[in-house]
Length: 591
Image 1 (cartoon, rainbow, N blue to C red):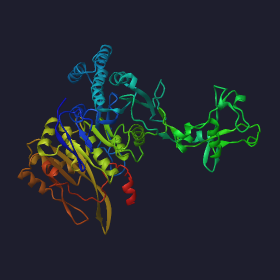
Image 2 (image 1 turned 90 degrees about the vertical axis):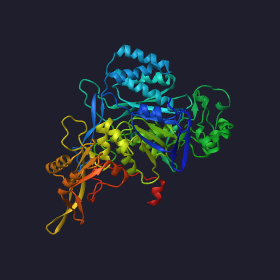
Image 3 (image 1 turned 120 degrees about the horizontal axis):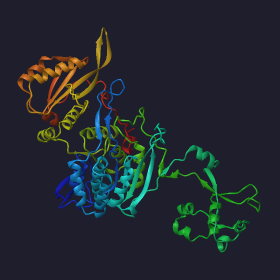
Image 4 (image 1 turned 135 degrees about the vertical axis):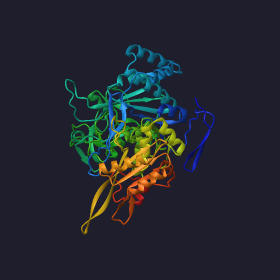
């Protein structure tokens, strides 16, 4: 286990982590990490420091998932790129990770993975399970003894994942398989329609955080069961008696009614009494005293002829409460459809309400919530909204930049977080460009708030690495008419740049009808490049300003704030779908 000794800023607080990762405290700061979650977990997250983990990993679906960006017309932009490739193959990395599994302390997991390999062989499914097993072991390590984990999956590999999780957490710590109905109908030829995902809920120990959460009753249920109403509200009728003994104090008549006639005894509900006068006081009351209390406080229904010795038997008035306790089949949270305001265009995005329910049930305010496959950041969004601390990890710069924007759009006050793993200086930018040119391009494009273009598609290099739109008013005769225009972004991560590259960008802008071109480079532009860019002239805006049609921007200047993309900004939300602002208490006061 790696050692660390560092200060971690946490607003006005600081925490020193000395020696090793075995400390059960974490700095009070929200964090996004770019990188492989296995490495991030091992190097940055202490033992027993997290209260709740939610993970929505790839499902091994053999599909590529694309991010759909916004275009000025409101339609899906052509600037869609692959967010992640959900395919796994047995190879050198899988073999290395499998060897790690055999030599880690949990021998149950080691034996189980050997058995799975003997059964499945060295194939794609085994590579996927090996990847997941190593990460689940690290997630178990960082979870507090009172913590819980929810793994979101579908039937592709859920049966195998359940076996892996039993090995990591112990089958005795399995709590639920939760079914989320993610769509109302699905046409699957020759089989039952596949309309659900599964969430496996495990606790680390038997004594784990749990909060009672209620979901709304369905109207059809209320119309049948809660048909009665008085000044206190809607209610249904329940029994005041129970089966079993027919002897003792609880069997004696009360107000002319004898439960023994029904072969039962008095068993009045006590929860409402305990909430009113306290558990200790309620415990001292006899069954008749409880009935008296319920009657005096309006919780007993008497039939028209019942109260004076008539034939009707008294019943308990069970008033409508907050709802029904959450169930392991979730059908009241809809998926995010194409028209939903919440939809940001990220594949496999889950509803915010689903994460809010999970976080509310299994954590408290101030607790630490971790999502190691955070995608577009729904879990960290929900955690921020519910006043939890959070940690998000993703292996793409695209996800990290989308989450940063989402959080800043949604939370105007009280938002503080750090981003780790993304370049902060020229040296780290060069390192990223050397390791992964695509991740470098996506990150560089985000520096000018543009959409990445086409991703890793073969043959897709048309001189465009990013696209950005801006709004402006143009003069048409004597009138000013609004129009949107395009900016093309070209990113160069090499050290050898020259005027030919600038000429290529000018030609690409002309071909695609772009008014402005941004040339982002690690290297310092040459004098000849600057001359070529100047020759392209200016875009003249109706605001009276002139903007260079070709702008040379260095990574160093963008990071320092010395330079930025220059263009009109009449409509600033043309490029990304915007998260709905969340109104916290401070914002509500402002409103």
